[in-house]
Amino acid sequence: MSRARPAPDSDGDIVLSLTGITKRFGALTANEAVDLDLHAGEIVALLGENGAGKTTLMNILFGHYVADEGDVRVAAPGGGLVPLEPGGGLVPLEPGSPHAALTAGIGMVHQHFTLAENLTAFENIVLGTGPLLAPGIAARAARARLADLMQGSGLLVDLDTRVSRLSVGEKQRVEILKALYRDARVLVLDEPTAVLTPQESDTLFATLRQLAQRGLAIVFISHKLAEVLAASDRVAVLRLGRKVADLPTAECDRQKLAELMVGHALTQSRREPREPGPALLTLDAVSCGTGRDAVHDISLTLHAGEILGLAGVSGNGQSMLARLVSGLERPERGSLRLAGKDIPAGDPRAMIAAGLARIPEDRHRDGVVGAMSVAENLVIEEIRSPRYQRFGLLDFAAIADRAKKAIAAYDIRCPGGDAVARLLSGGNIQKIVLARTLDAEPLVVLAAQPSRGLDIGATGDVHRRLLEARGRGAGVILISEDLDELFALSDRVAVIHRGRLSAPRPAGELDRARVGLMMAGHVSEDEAA
Image 1 (cartoon, rainbow, N blue to C red):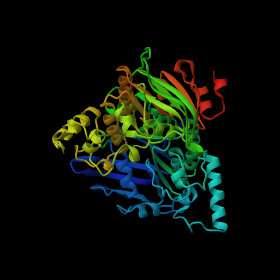
Image 2 (cartoon, rainbow, N blue to C red; image 1 turned 180 degrees about the vertical axis):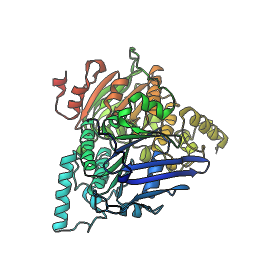
Image 3 (tube, rainbow, N blue to C red; image 1 turned 135 degrees about the horizontal axis):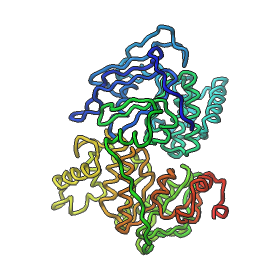
């Protein structure tokens, strides 16, 4: 990605203005007196730690929340992207109405999916824009337009596949296509590249730049500082609900942005060389599943005191492999051994009892029970432990004490242990999962996309804790699409492509370019050697 042009400085092309936005959830102030203007043809990056108020601010804009104070104004309708109606000015946006936001030309791509799982990708994208499944010219025109969008953006997906059968990465692509399909004047993207490869991200931002040149105003929330510096015109930073910076991207660098986000200088954890210990987890010629998420004849050995990194583009068998290791799937062929013992296939309780803990890929669906409290989610896998029961009854004082300590240790931004998990930001939900997983000091940690959607400070904390687990002798399987993360943490790296796993090799013997090509299937394992 090339550095974007300087941000517009004229007040005449403002298409969106948020003034004095304040939002409270009980004792928690999510936004406090936030001002933000957006110009036509401008790409603004919105940065901040998890829980800093970024998503809350955008949800107020889109009508999901109503601000306690402040107002939102948008440019009067002017017929598409540009030009705006001369002298149209700004008009108030009806609060708490997503329909009003859509009518005003505001589109939003959420970090977590808002798709109908029983409909196809095509049906989800065009839903609400015309007759569903129109058999004639309208459907053909819609498909032709989507084909052009997919070709131009690199966001490829099978339009006729049900969303329930798509991988996490493919669902994200559908969300982005759904927004691009509509001619919005303001587009908000919450972590749009979280599940995309670097090449797909570059293509996406190239597409967004083309739309901006036509007058589309874009706000994107991201924790990836490299893409922020390369793709945005301007950067706004929130910290603890307040806007602490709003400056041209040309005046920023990674260190400055990181310090603005967290309020202090950051230190980076480093992996120190060490000799691995005995084998902890062994997969021998394991096969399972059908279709894109199947795995074929996978063999690997994880040793004590090592981090084994698995690289791959989303939808190439990582999810099935993680489910097998977690005990959620039974292998059709092959076997698993944990700590020298054969584990009953398809028995997650046995895997936990044997010393395995997992950080699931989809933290909302598999990581927490959204309707339960933070405290309940922290102890849900140990609820039968004597630590949390007395005479067969739950010890609520012990559960509350556990929550208090975890909230402090992992900086979980919430009102307290009684807070409902589903109301927290995605990053804070991930911290709940991390606290439950790592504080148990398991023998084996299965970490699937552990830093996805986390800010730079929280990501550093995740990396430090995984390295601490390695240091005390645990084995860690790190499944990640982030090559920077894999090379920073992994002792050995293997690549999974179309359900087949390459032989793990020391990270020092590999380079990013070659691993990236292997992820895309352009280099065989023999060629990579």
